[in-house]
Image (cartoon, rainbow, N blue to C red):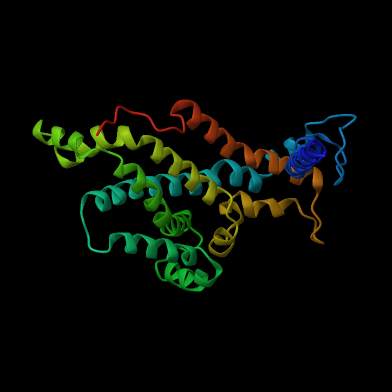
Length: 276
C-alpha cells in the first residue's frame, strides 16, 4: 500500500511538472514557428513552406527598424549604464560611511521606487519632464528609468560591496591610492559580478517596459520597440500574427544575447580571493 501511495505521489509530481513545462514552452514553440509561416494562426503548426518574408517586412518598416535597433538600445542601454554606475557608487558609500538609520533609508527608497515607475506617479513625472522640456526625448525617458530602478539597484549592490574586506582598501591607501583609484582598481574587480547582475536586470526592466515610453514619447520615429509593435496591427486593432510574431522574435533576442554574453564573459558567480 505504501509503495502504491509513493508511486501515485511521484506520478502526480511528474504530471504537474510536465504540465508546467508545457505551459511555458508551448507559447515559445508558437513564437519560433509562426514567424516563418505565410499565414500564421494561434495554433501551433510547423510551416509547410517556410518563408523569411515576414522578417523582411518588419525590417523594411522604418518605424519598427528604428525602434528595434536605435531607440530601444539607446533607452535601455542608457538606463543600464546609469543605474549600474550610480548604484555601485551609492552602495559603496552606504557600505563604508555609517549613517544613522541607513538600512531604513534604503528600504524606504525601495518602497517609493515602486511608486515612481507606477501609474500613480505618471502625472507628476509628466509635468516635471514637461517643465524641463524633456517630453518626447530619449534622455527624459532614461532619467525616469534610472530614478525608478536605482533604489533596488542600490539594494542589490550593497550586498556585494559589504562582502569586500576593508583590509584590501587599507592596503591600497597605504600604497598611496586615491579614493577614486581605490574604487576602480580594488573594489570594482571584486563587485564585478554584482554590477553585471544589476546591469542585465536594469536592461531587461527598461527594454520590456511599455507604460513610461507610451506616456513620454510622442514621435513615431522615437518610439521604442514595445510601442512600435502596434505598427503591425490593423486599423480595427487586430494583430497581423505573422508580422507580430516575427517582430517579437527579433525583439526578444537582444536581452537573451546580453545575458549569454555576460554569462560567458564574466559569469554570474561570486569569485575572487576574498579572505577575512
